Length: 135
Image (tube, rainbow, N blue to C red; front, side):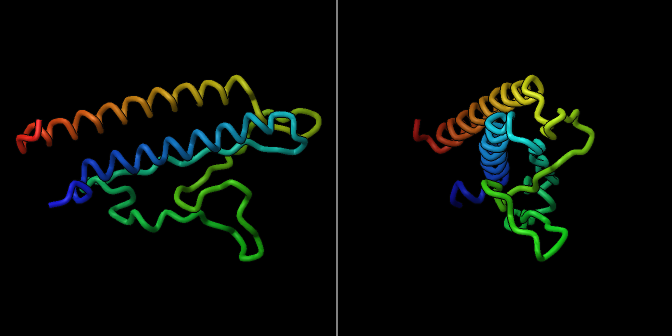
């Protein structure tokens, strides 16, 4: 059985990819902190069922939903994870709703979570190597 077929490792890889994509979205929010009319975005965290795959095992179908066929994809938004534009941000007079403190807290929390997932992934690979006698 290839390592890619192990559900736990597949879930950890999906989680790492989500954290990488979220880091890019958060960095985009910070870089547009002075752009007029910009509203911050965030990614919706994938849900994992008992099999280890997000959204009930439909890993390849995490496309972004558009409300109209006339809408085009925003620049830099990945098709792999749903993005979330939450309403209720404080908006400055020029229409920008980015709160730098909030975004930086999300960035640091995302970094810590990514480090935890990569550590867990590395340790899982180490356990598999020990079990098959390659260590």
